[in-house]
Amino acid sequence: MTFAKTALLAGALTLASSVTALSLAGEASAQSKKVNWNLQIERKDSAHLIGNPNASAKLTEYVSYTCGHCATFAAEGDPRLKLVYIPTGRVSVEVRHVIRDPVDWTVAVLAHCGEAKKFPLNHSTFMAQQDKWLSKTSTATQAQRTRWQNSDRTAARRAIASDLGLDTIMLGRGYSRIEIDRCLADNDAARTLAIQSIGEAKRMGVSGTPSFALNGQLLEGTHNWPSLYERLEAHFAAKPRP
Image (cartoon, rainbow, N blue to C red):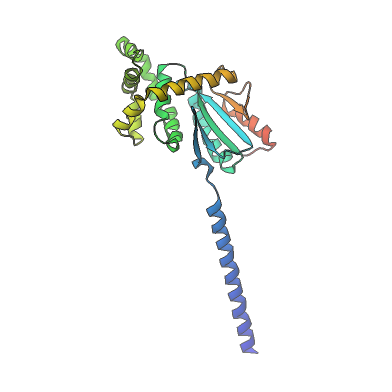
């Protein structure tokens, strides 16, 4: 009888261990299959798409690097989108530029520099440090401003990057001076970026920044995180914690 009980107990423990092992294996398998949508980044002409390309909610941001309200949204809204919405796979975010002047154009060119996967941190870094580099435009000399308007656009972008410390920011992001200069000197890419960005903003009727579109429809009266959050809440008929 004792032997039978011992054998039964041993069998039960073996079964329990097997079930636990299978459970852990299943969890590990599920984790391995889970997609980190924040790392799914695709370059689309003048924009970058972050997240599930088949998301049911396709959000487009129209932003300018010389726009103070855009920097505020980048600080308040972008982290919440990355933390709450994009990971679910239900929301993708496409970042598009509204180019307003040579300075804005230069920053956009640098934000696009290198592989697509580098864009999100390039973008957030320029926005986070906007006060630092944009404030230098107010103290720029006439000679500097003249260089910024140079008909040689490569020379103009190099001057802007140097005078405002944009090249230093890129160095801090791990770029070499050769890589930075190569991006600043790519006139074809810069021209295409400007033409496509301006054309898209006109096509959508974007009149100010930041502006947003959801599934191809411009969201009227939505220019900050609180108002965008309400739109997303209404879209999903639920209220995720912001």
